[in-house]
Length: 169
Image (cartoon, rainbow, N blue to C red; front, side, top):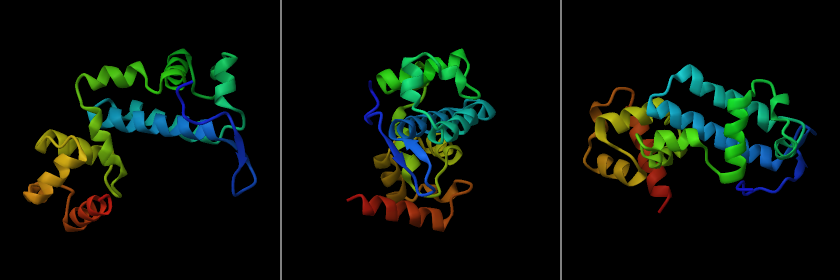
């Protein structure tokens, strides 16, 4: 299995049983959804991965076990195509959908997701207008003061970006 997490359960703050692998898989589905939005994929379709991630993180049973037993379709909203994508993520850590879009957009744009207040649409704008594809590109654009004309990015967002980058050093 390519997921880093073992098939272990834990009890959350509300006393509910959760699965670490479900959490990790949910994170990968959110990442895929964000990446698709950044790439310009139909947003209403890409948001389905976020909804699915929410369901999987809270699913009472191990999704790894469901995958092993070929029962992923028991999860609401999971058909054959999505089950295939989930299976690829579980087994390889990526999916053919992500790799298909990686031929058009660099996956390094996902580094920008961790900056507070920076969503997929803003990241897409940064990539399209300034060719920012990584944290290093963002740092250079900030140093050269290239972000001042980008709609939706004001002083507060620029300060947040600078703080995030300086905290990483």
